Image (cartoon, rainbow, N blue to C red; front, side, top):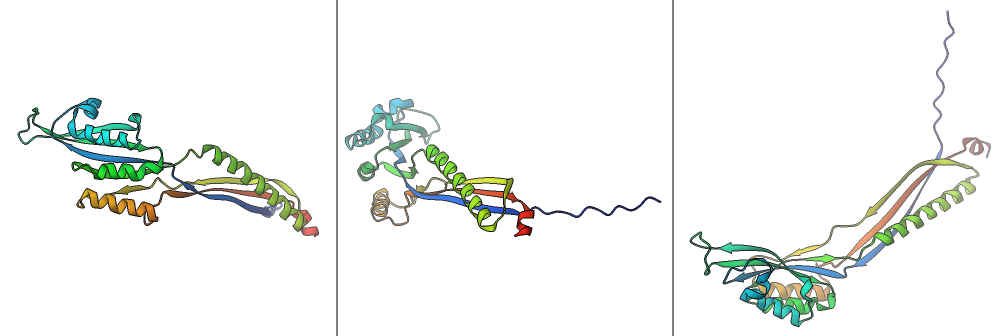
Length: 228
């Protein structure tokens, strides 16, 4: 009869886990506004920016406050006709996107929109700087900090780091903030409220908090820990 070999004991690895984070509030540097303009005629394509009366009035007002031509783009046209047939007398709703590349102009842009009787602000979307370079820099610094902390802890405990057991990193970046207006409220009242919120900082955030986190886990030498 063959001898029974007892199973080998399960040896659990002793590990040290460390975390390093970077966190910062980032301010928006641009904004996109989408405006609907009710027109009395139908003009297709980008020609509507100049040939559709109501749209051209809006474009002229925006250019006057400092918006550049290449920051204006027609996003869509919705034709309205009671007879179901497209004629010269048909009306249309034009969707215009405005890129506000200098936030100091935002108040004047909102004022220009509110001055147009046939215009309504659909929503405002904040835009932020490209954080790719900062993300890479934070990742490197978090890894360096975590490694240094792990080495410091190992020295303080009198153990030796053997190998990296696991690594994980998380980049937290909240979604862009979109502000939508109330469809039932008059456009002038909506823009006045929106402007007041921007000036006072109520309910309308134009900054976000981004975070880089790194988690490292190292296997340590159990023998040195047992000796100590």
